[in-house]
Image (cartoon, rainbow, N blue to C red; front, side):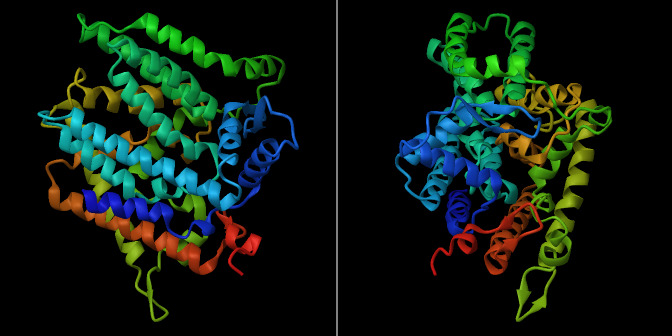
Amino acid sequence: MLLLLFIGSGLRLLWAADMEWKGDEIWMYETARQVADGNQPWPWLGMVSSTGLKNPGLSVWCFILLAYVAPTPLAMVRWIQGLNILAIWGLFLFCYWQGRGQADRPIWLWGIVLAAVSPLAVLFSRKIWAQDLLPIASVLFLIAHRYRHRPWGAFGWGWVGTLIGQLHMSGFFLAAGVWLWTLYTDWRHHPGFRVRWLSWLGGTLLGLIPLLPWLAYAARAPNQAARSWVGWVVPKYFIHWVTTSLGVNLSYSLGSYFWSDFLPQPRLFGVPTYGVAIAHGFLLTVGLWGLARWVRACRYPVNTLMAPVANPLGFYLRSFGFATGLIFTLFALNTPVHYVIVAFPMMYVWLAAILADQRRIWFGVLGCQVLIAIAFLALIHGTGGFADADYGVVYRLQSGWGQ
């Protein structure tokens, strides 16, 4: 486990100058830099989102604070990478300590290990982008909620739960899903469990203060969120949950180059080995087989495939997965894959639960995802990115860094 955690940390730090450098990243850095240097007033709102609405101000305020200690884009992305590494190691140590004596502790730990090396998790740890701050926020949210029976935990749950949606709108869906599932679970399965609701309310009200400028703005702005009946028929949140846990959706970043340039990797002496394609085939096979096991377990609960609703593993798999995904689906949103980052790291813990009794297959999944993550970073480093794909041309080439 420790070896893979170190590998995952290294992948986040490797070739930082190869980071994405497109409109969102440039806007975020330049705005933060201008405000930190005193050349621009403090912004009360963030950049315009895909819905046509501007994001809450917190989405850019975090980067303004980073700009005071990070004088260059490369320095800023190093801070982002460091916060993501902190999220992984912090949650791993918390679960190792807090889960002592519990049978599901290995599932939590192996799930976090997968989150450390999984390709999309690595990709979303290397950008000057508000979504890249979601993992550390989700970890704090999860830990605070775990201690909701204590005043500080309930306060932190309410506070972080309000702030996480201001980083990215997907956070509002997560906070709502966990809140609703908490009401249901504690009422039905923990009748004697006392949530410190007054502390939660205090934290929530405190977290709402920085949202006030955005609420005033949103009340006047037209809502242009992309909704359609397709969002009900095709539950993209759940699809992204599965493919992200398997590490097979880097076509999100590479576009058509996923098929023409990435699957033939790695190349030995210029000859394609198609190792990445073989790894994808293995992961997709395991995924289909694992889904079949999980569906059967939904009807006939066995072992750890369907953890009891009342225990922490069962609660967070259902609240981060089912409840949050159901809200996404009911809103009929066209959910992109980067919205699922907010559920970090539960999609990986879910896969670890499915394969908990299949150790050899699990090691194969870990090995394939490490291979895919390394091949992806090597391809980007070797090509400098792709101008007509989502990744774009890397910062190193656009800025002349290192020349």
